[in-house]
Amino acid sequence: MSKYLFTGKYTATGVKGLIQEGGSSRHQAVKSAVESVGGKLESFHFAYGETDIFAIVDFPDSASAISLALLIGSTGVVSLSTVPLITVDEMDAAAKKSPSYRAPKG
Image (cartoon, one colour):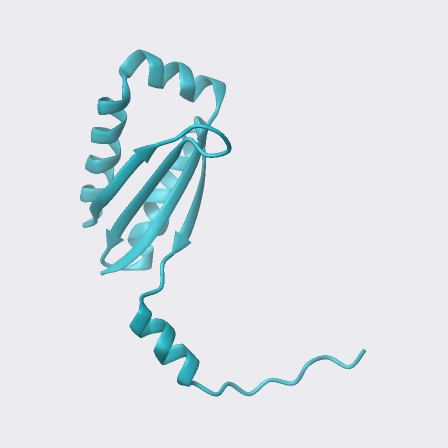
């Protein structure tokens, strides 16, 4: 399983829906959506300021994460950003690799 950080900003319509349905309803809707593609909602938080929602989710593959992001984004009531999270072991493995690259001549 891979972890992803989802951040979201509600539109005015999304805020109206949140006020009408409440936070628990939105949390349950996200949890159900995550589970419908084989994922697990690790944490879900509301915030105020630049970002309204923070969620950390485990998914079995990137296609599952992308499918959820597409579904939520298609509603038009929240602007969503998805960040793949990297484990310490993955970072260590990446740091040990030696890619070959030639910068463009300028």
